[in-house]
Length: 310
Image (cartoon, rainbow, N blue to C red; front, side, top):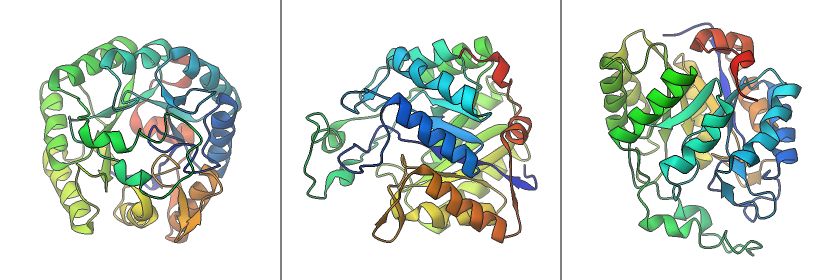
């Protein structure tokens, strides 16, 4: 399913990068909201959000931490707020669902399979660590399986989807995740249009090879026909290249400091908005238009910001 406009998602801070890795990575509610507002002004229509401990910057599933930032964003922008159900690779499903169940957002990110989500490469540089939790966190992912079983995925779909009207950014890190999504679609647990986020370059998932992007798109076409919209994110240096290719192919795009701390070769991004500005410029120079939040809601059949819990 395509339209004439491109949805830009901005993933503000995630759960992998630490404040040591980037001095501009936001982690207080004030800074996350500030970055979110700037990203929307720059052209993002969806904000993909995690929460952080305001003192240490460590990832947290605490609903109170989310509720310190979500109302600020909702009051300052008309963006679609997309809360993670991933949270962090060390969190239980109950922890990961606590904030979404309280906030009842229009959209949640949902990983479509268990995987070895290895991000230890992010900590290979000789950083001067200023948080005790940060130094062992990325290296520890060499011994962690990020679990998203069929039972867990079904629980999320039923509790958030059926009971609260939340729709999903289906995060697909490999070909098998598309088939998992097709299974749940075939069994009626999700309704079109499906919003598929194809993810490239995370160790443990499909590699950042342009042929893999084509293969993921061809596979989704076979499985879902016209019932889906798709987007692409690529980790690190592949971010803008893959987003550009996705836009050329009629897809949507995701940028943000969660996925990449840089704006160019060996140049750190000054913030999330700088990445949004860059991809928006590329999209518009290619002759396409960027979707507004209202247009994104229509494209993805979302319930509306008046029905959220914040």
